[in-house]
Image (cartoon, rainbow, N blue to C red; front, side):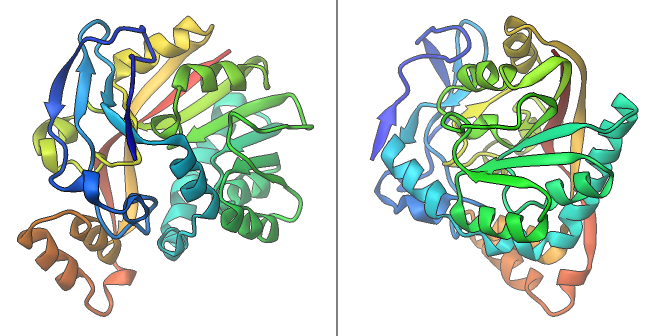
Length: 300
């Protein structure tokens, strides 16, 4: 079931303007087909922009019980299939964090999935805690990083005992939650004064998003919010953070995975690309590609 979002989470206004109509037939489709890297279908509900502050959002969403069940029972083998590329991405992000701080410390990875980023942090000497609602992912994370502490919980309901943290990361998290402002408030309680917050988010004002429009692969049923540099800066500043860096992000994927992602969306050209990208050997050919995402660094 899809429910209307009553108001903008950033400014509280309800007046909005449609940016993209809903994917045809999505209201009647099974929600399970649309979540995680292993989704079988791509698509989205109607996407609107707040007339007051400009924050874009999905006008509808699956009800909270449906989403909790999906995230709790989620298994995402495609995420693990790209393990090598994700390690490269996460190693680069972790080295940037070490460069920023000049020291190691305690790190909380919100939405830690199977612990790939936590493993890279541990290699560099960090003490790591991770939370994720997917029990399947947390079980793998505990095996992958025995020295870490991992909890199967949503960020809103997590009960942590390792407080406080020097760094908190939210890679691809805020776009999924009911109320981003509440999540920022929550993690603020877990971060030391002067601690760093790192985020990765789809950027609806990126050149990729503007150019691809309805074909932008970040337009997804599971994404409830679509930030821009201006709206994420405002959200963080209103909760006492100083934004020190916003930069475009590139991801590293195999050609086969790129084909799978394009093939999740309707349309014959994409289906053809999905089929051709499944050819033997393309799992081993990797590319750095821009997807219209941004990385944000903020200090408390």
